[in-house]
Length: 144
Image (tube, rainbow, N blue to C red; front, top):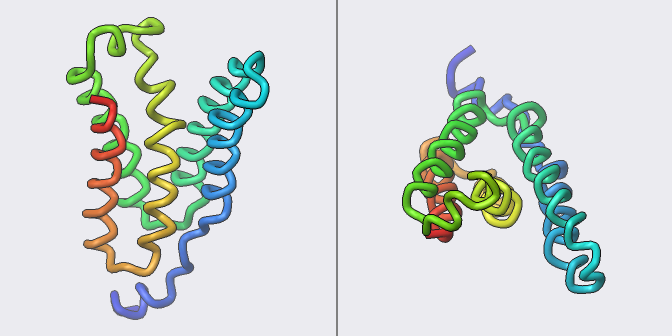
């Protein structure tokens, strides 16, 4: 099988689980606390679980090429660590050092990553990977 045939026979990326997870995370993390402020802790928990769900979707269920799957997860980890060095000390050390990952993954990184996957599903591999890196870095960089 030639590389061109292999590329055309590859199944498209499965987007709906990631989109569903991102919508649920944003609703539970941002909308529910506005309606029921006493439920804001559930929003934080839903954000963490939803962020992990988005990562699990991308890694195991997205049908993306393996270099993109692993590369995205590694870049997310590196970007959060690098961002931690740039943010204010209160954010970097807040919640025993977990404040940035707990807030960045469900509020910006996860939904932005899902939006990237939806918007770039028809692009070439090189352009997809370049925009993926830019999306991850921008989503983490907004915390600085």
